[in-house]
Length: 297
Image (cartoon, rainbow, N blue to C red; front, top):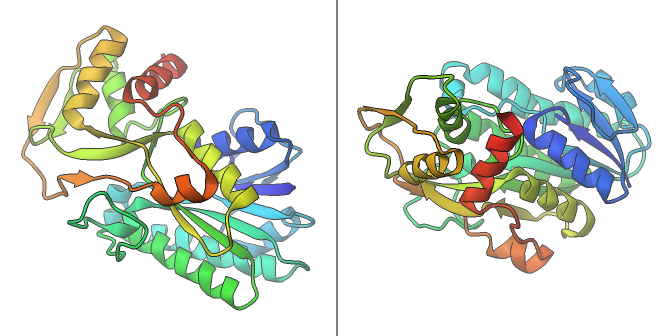
C-alpha cells in the first residue's frame, strides 16, 4: 500500500515509518518539521490543521497512519486550546482533505489511554467508559468520535489504537519518567523529582511493539475497531531500580508531595492479541530501558 504517516518525524511516527517500509509498503511522510532521515518515498511539510496542505500529500494514498498531535497531558492543562486545535482540529482537517479525493482510504488513528481517565476497574479494556481527566485526553477522544462519525457516513475505514506509555529506542522526552531517570543517571540532572513514594503503576510498551501494532492494524484490523496497546506494568520505584541496574549508575531521588492521581493504570490487551495476533516482543522493562539508554547515551 501507499501510506501517508502524519507526525512521521516524531518518536512513535518514525518507528511506524520504519516498520511500514520494512514490510514493503510505500511510505510518504507528513510533518511540520523534517528531522532526521527516514525510509520514505516523499516528504510533505505543513500544518496538520490545514486541509489544503494535506490534500496533495493524500493524492493516490491507500491509507493514513495519523499520529500528528500534541501529546503532553500535563502541558494540556495550561494550553487546552492548542491541544484541541491540533488534536481535534487536525483530525477534522485530515478528514476534510480525504473527502476531497476519490476512493475510500483506511485511517489508523494514534489515540491514547488518556481517554479512559482513571477507571477503578483494572486492567482497562476497550469497553471501559471514556472519562478523560485532562484536555489532551478529551481532545483525542473527540478526534476518535469524529473519525467514527465520518466513517459511518461513508468516509474512511477507521481503526483506533489507544496507546499507553510508549518508551524505548530513541525516547528523549524528559517529560516522561524513563528518559528523565536516564538523564539523571547520565549526570545531566542532579536528581529525579518524584511525587509521593513511587508506588504509582503505569503501563509501558516499546515503541517498536507500538509500530508493529500500526502495521497489523493497517493490514488486518476490521473496520471500526478500537484496540489498546500496552505491555508492561511498572511502578516508578521499579523504573528507578531498573535504570540503576541497566546503567550501573545511581539515580538520586528527591521526593515531592504526592499528587491526586490514579494508583494504577494498566492495559488489557486481549482484543489486539486475539484479533491481530499482536504480542509485545521488546517491552520487558529491562529491554525498554536498555534500548533507551543505548540509543541516547
